Amino acid sequence: MDHFAKFHIIWALEHKCAEEVSEGVERYILSYFGLPEIWQSDNRKEFKSTLMVNLIEPWDGNCKIIYGRPRHPQSQGLVEQGNGSLERMIASMLIQFNTNDWVNLIPKIQYNLNTQKTTDCTPFEIVFNKQPNIGNQKKIVQLVTRNNEEIELDVDQNEFDQVQPNVENQVELEPNVQLVQVQPNVENQVELEPNADHDEPNEELNENNNVKRTIRSKVRSNQEKAARKMEEKHNKKRNKRTLEFEIGDRVSVLIPRIDRGSSDLPRLPGVIGRVNKDFYEIVCKFGILNDCLRACDLEIL
Image 1: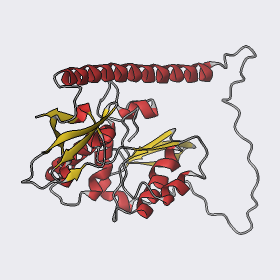
Image 2 (image 1 turned 30 degrees about the vertical axis):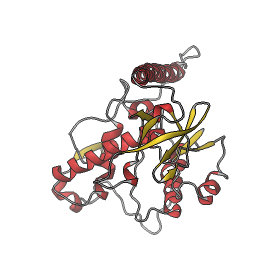
Image 3 (image 1 turned 45 degrees about the vertical axis):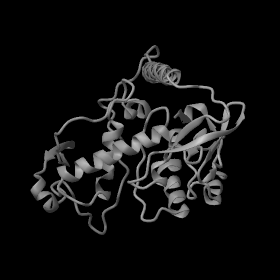
Image 4 (image 1 turned 180 degrees about the horizontal axis):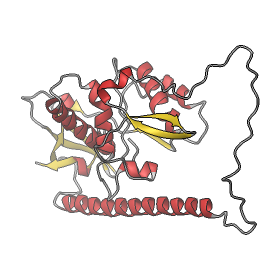
């Protein structure tokens, strides 16, 4: 997922291994968009492999690779939120299309996610600088030539496979026929005046660039506004807690869902064993936790 535009790129894997992940990244991401300035992922082995590093190395461009904190899904919050939306949309479309083949639904799901407004603009509009094609009119036509003019004839979809090319004006050449070069018809050509205006394409290009800059500046402004609201909400929540602990204080730590069963408690009780600036060492009945935690990761008991 592109962090700025919220643009999704989704494909299915038969095996969650480094080989398939690196192959998909090159085929579906790098081949279309090139190397990103920042590549951020979690700490799973399929991402932290030499295959991924070797994949990025030959591509042109500057790139910084960032791995999130272990056992800390908040560092991948945008992706985790996108995964939730993806799961809900898969469940909805399986019911809508009455099928269990979720793999073939991925293109439709990706398009739906990329055409939903996130910051007053859709990801599709931010990336491609145009509105998605919306409508439900489908039409099949056959191009034919009549009286030296190219026209379109409507084709019935049921008879599409039986459509044959129009051979009305085709002439079979005899073996002794000599081909000659035909000069273009200049009867209807208009000579441009010396002072004709040739700046229309440039004006259209400049207008498109201005629209693109406007969209991106609007998205950036909305993202900054959302970040400020999130920071205010986070600070408000922090103010309700005890932000400074002392050695011996009883606290609890949230246990990641992947590390606990359905009947286990969501939080692990412990005691502050050591304080190192903004980090606290936690001692529980199982021993000392490997990672020191910040005050925002703790709750007082």
